[in-house]
Length: 414
Image 1: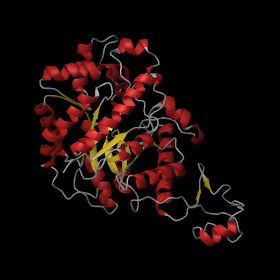
Image 2: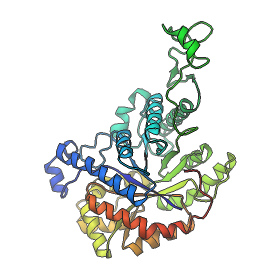
Image 3: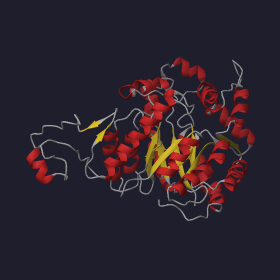
Image 4: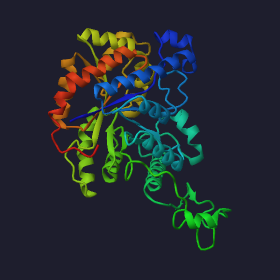
């Protein structure tokens, strides 16, 4: 069975680019953001009723343009979980090149308890310079793409160290760590003079207090509800290194902005997992993200693209494709809406058309790689709540069954 994850990038609604300009900075527009936030609660309830496996948001900051206003995914997760019964909640994901790993370990462990295990954790590297460079400055991190540059290598090293620290904090009674990034405890060599040392030695985790009566390890509490820890997801834009890393570590790999690349890279995940002693079927513990637009006719789908996707595609996605995917620009300087929609229909990340069109394209992809996860995305709340729910209903009732038939391997644990 395919596990559908509804991924939202909370978008502040504008009638068109002209209104977005008139209301600048619309990302700080209280009424419009309030509308998007509270509508997401209804979206979570609908996803729960439709049997969607999970719902996620992102961590992005400073989107004054209103395109991706998602600075606090854990807050979303907590509220969504409180108003649903079965829906799993998580994020894709915390940008670990900017975070404090112990704080993330604590926050996610609490969320796992609050949801009674209906929780998954996403870790991302960070590709948006404007905010990653500001929020991650204490770590010396810079936003990057998988280009082999010095910034790329530094970002990758920070990401891996941070993620592995989170896992240690989740799974070990007490931890110590000494690197260029972190000393735990601080100072690492001398330890910490602690006025409660006698009580901690008697009542705390073994090893926290050394023979010198000082703190030499720390115990991160609470431990997660899910043992040994919640499922981990990592989005990848097609980097072979990232895909292989996920396979080695046992993380679920979500291929984003990378349709054709996902097909090519999926076997690498299986090979890396097998080398680490985890034999998996092709597609197992892997997923692909798809931006969907389904209409009763192809013309209706194009009209929806024009209303809900053209603005962000022109001013965000087209520039991202230029930088990340293949450094090309095909839109003219002042494109018409028709030209933008034509370009969207050719974009690797989008699947558009009638139910039959979308189902047929996804089925062909699943025949090549039967992914365990479909990460379905719409530009909510630019796309209205009712429309987004209807699109999700079509995925669950008209498209998912055809994909289920192609994922008959033994499922990884939920």
